[in-house]
Length: 156
Image (tube, rainbow, N blue to C red; front, top):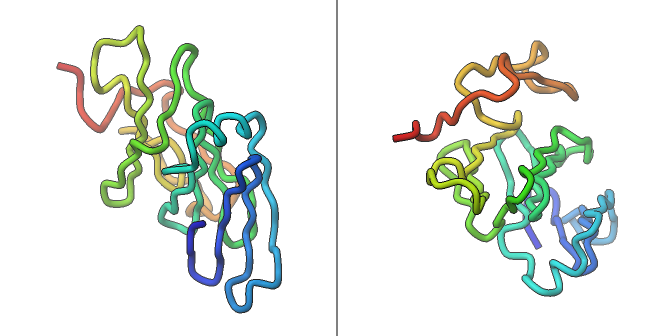
């Protein structure tokens, strides 16, 4: 369960995320499915899976992907799939200001920075990202470069 202003967001052990009105708890605002997560949730628990980002965005971190929804209406903001052979580790995600650093260890990578993804309410944080023309209120945004380097820490 994750409290948010006017909301209570619950992650069920079989995968759905439910947003409930907090006034009296009687109104379910929406459900969002997390495909393929029921077994993983049963085995590992839900620690770190639900994370509030700035801008009223909820990030849902699973081993295969990070999905972000607007809390106000449940609208999909962005999806970040992991790289082949890698898995996100929700319990190891850490906030740093407006940025959420998500652990993504990859056996084939030897640089520690390769095992991190930095996201915020607009998606992956990159050095050349421009905010969307509508100031982040719409459904889409894009980065200037499709695979920019890490901005959290440069490789040594």
